[in-house]
Length: 481
Image (cartoon, rainbow, N blue to C red; front, side, top):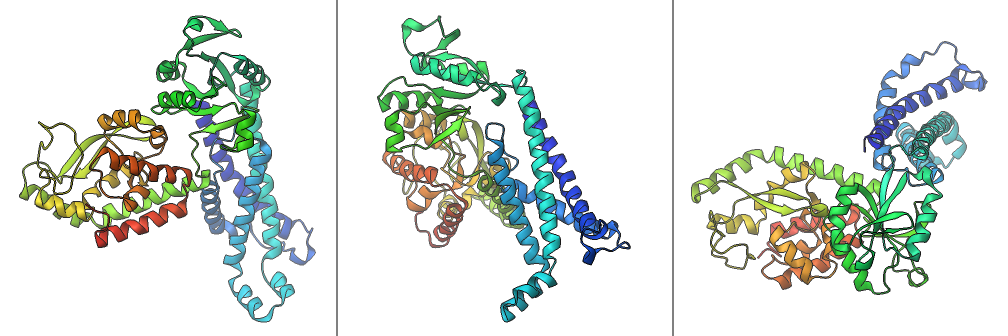
């Protein structure tokens, strides 16, 4: 939403001010205020810190970005955000201490004289600076939180929420949500599969439709979240609802039962001011997701730019050895069911599926050209997909994107396939380094197991592990069929 984007831009702008005000305040307190007589210096000028101020500003903004301070905090408490700000400032000051005190730290390692380490370094200056940074960064975010709270309490820039289940649990949920208007959420109505409840109202809200209408209702109501009230004790009922949610970008929550809490299948969070379980949750922390995206951009840019002469030669070879374009374009299903065009170096003869229709690749596939066999074995056919990564349609690591034809088939045959669609697809993934090319529906089912493992254990360290194993696959040919 425009208001949320404006809030992030304002937060970023005031962070720039906060970083520099903190530096000026630390400078004044240490050298000009005479609060520390031993450091008082009436002749030192702040312009001396011009270049350090620019470097520190860039450093803090990057650190704030990596630690998730520019994610949406409006539905989380100010205390939680303050903890993250404090942790970020401590990390930043620690790194500054290491950078500015390398020689003194080396001397301390030999002498063990901690007093000398403290007195000979800028330790006191850094502590003062850290205190100023924490104060001004926290004030900035507290102010933005308060600004948003005032808007939300007046019904401005609120997000719509739809409750699934017109029942007693849904009625309690409406009452709970009405207690916290400052969180910025408004109930748009209910969804219920009971035909007798259609075209009626419940607790003053309209019954908007059935489970099968979820995609259309979410789009029409511009809903930010769905909350599943207890509609059934059967897991199949929940799965049925989630299957309709797989192709839409919306947060999904569920009211926990006592058994859910006891068994601990899903973690309960305070969301919208009430305890809810997050379904199809992205398990990667915010700061790691930022690092993952930064890694995507850097690696993709380097591979495409540094290897450009090789890719041009390869494209020419493909054109000269078989009829058709060098780059093959195909429609694939991305994150949350979003359709995009994926690029590959063409490894098959032109119009290979013109008469057969979509089908799985197989070993010794007659549709593959001689050059295609080589670039598939070495995974060079995937190189153009780094363009998809730069565009944000794919990531370096994630489940392979499927064609819409197969996705519809797989959603019917594989339970929880919807979880796979919730992830951004990747050039390589856990399934690719653990299994061979798909040649049948059974291969895909096996790969989904690996993809769901990745979904539950997403992390930057796992991504690095998968990338390293991918290089082994490329150089050894292991896993390529």
